[in-house]
Length: 59
Length: 497
Image (cartoon, rainbow over all chains, first blue to last red; front, side):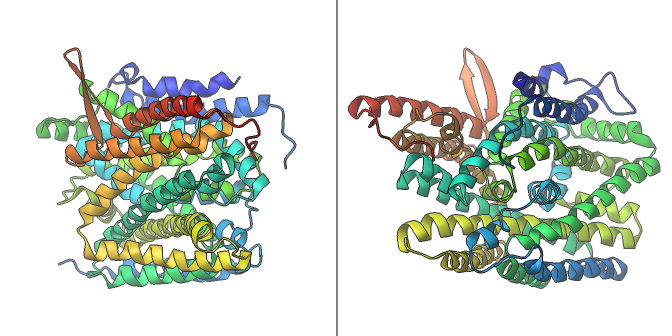
C-alpha cells in the first residue's frame, strides 16, 4: 500500500507526460487540469494508505 | 501618486484591529503558563489537534508572499511559474511518511527544534549547531519577504512611506512576544477563511467577467506569443527538467524550515499530522487557482510596472473598493501569521541550540521561554531593518539561497529517523559541501536557482538545490565509510532516543 505514495511523484515529475495544451477541459489546457487533478488524487491515495495501516498506540 | 482609497483602507483597518485584539487575547486561549515553559510559548503547549494544525500549517506554509509572488511569476513567464503546484502536491506523501516519525521522536524526548532532534540522534554539537544556524539564517529573509508582500498591498491602497509597515510589525512583535505560538494559531483561522473567500470569489467572478477560462488562457497565450522568449502556456523542452527538479527540491525543503516544523512539533499526536497530510492539499488547490490570477490579468488588460503588483492591480480593476480592501486585509494578515511562526521557530532554535548549548546549559524552563521571547523580537527587528535599509532584491536573492541552504539539513534530520548508519562527521561535511557548492553555483549564475550540466553534448538545466543535496548525500556516505575505517562505531552507541 505504501507504494501508492510514490504515484504522485511519478505522475508529476515526469513532465513530458503532460506538457501539452490539448485536450482542454472547461477552458483549461491539459497541462493545468492534469496537475490540478492530482491534488484530490493525491489526497485520496494518502487516505487509502492511512486507512490500510494499523493504527498506532499513541493518541 | 495614488490617492488613498478610504473604503478599502477602512475595511483593511477593521480586520487588522480585529486580529490584533485576537493576538493579545490568544495568550489565554487553551490556557497554559505561557512564560513558564518553552513548550507553552514556542509550541502552544503541544496540544493542537487536526483542525488547528490544519489552519496553522496552512497559514504559515502558504504565505502572503506566495499569494503575491506565484501569480507574479506566472504572469511574467507562464507555465514555468506553475512549479509551485506539483511542489505543494508531492510534499504531502512525504509529510505523511516522514513527519509522524519525527513527531514521535521529538515528543518522546521533549525536543522543540530540528536541531534538538539531530543532537538527540547523533550527540554531535557541531551538527546540531549547523542545523540550527542554517534554520535561523534561512528564515530571516523569508520573514523579510512577508513584509514585502504586506508592503505591496499597503501601497496599492495609496499609503506611501514605510511607517505603516513599521507600525504593523511592531504590533505583530508585541503580541507574538506575549502570546507565543497561540497568537498566529488563532489568527490563522481568520486569515485562512478570508483568503478562501477572496480566492473562491475571484476564481468564479473574474472569469465570468472576462468571458470564461478559455478566454483567460487564450489572452495569456496571445500575450506570451507577442512577448517571446522562455514563456508560454506550456513548458519549453529545455525547461522541463528545471520544472521537475524545482518541484522536487522545494518539496523536500519545505518541511525542513523552522516555521513548518514548529507546526509539526506543536501537534497533539502523530495521527494529527497524518490527517493533515490528507487535508492540507485543499490549500494546494487554492494555490493553483491563485496562480491563475497571473493569466486573468492579461484577460483583464491589467498593465503593471513590476509583476508583484499584478494581484492588487487585478483586484482593484475588477472588484468594488470594499471587497478589494477585504482582499488586501486577507493578504496582509496572511503575512502576519507566517512572520510570527517563523520568528518563533527561529527563536526556539536560538534558545535551545545556541543559548542553551553554548551560553547557559543549566537554564530553567522559564529562562528558556524568556530568552526565546527576546530572540523573537530580535529576529523580527532584523528582518525589518533588512527591508528598510537594503535593496528589496537582496531579500529575494537571500530567500532563494535560503531554500538551497535549508535543503542541506535534510540528510541530518531525516536519515537519522530511519537508519543509524550515517556518522555525524559525514553529515556535517556533506552539509558543508552542499551549501558551499550550491551557493557558489547560484552566485556564479547571477543568483539564478538553476545549474547546467553538460553531458555528451547535451546540456541539462536543473535546480541547484537538488544538485547540492545529491552532492551532500554522496559526501556524507563517503565520509561515513572513511570514518568507519578509522574508528569503528562503538558498540554502545546511544540508541535513537
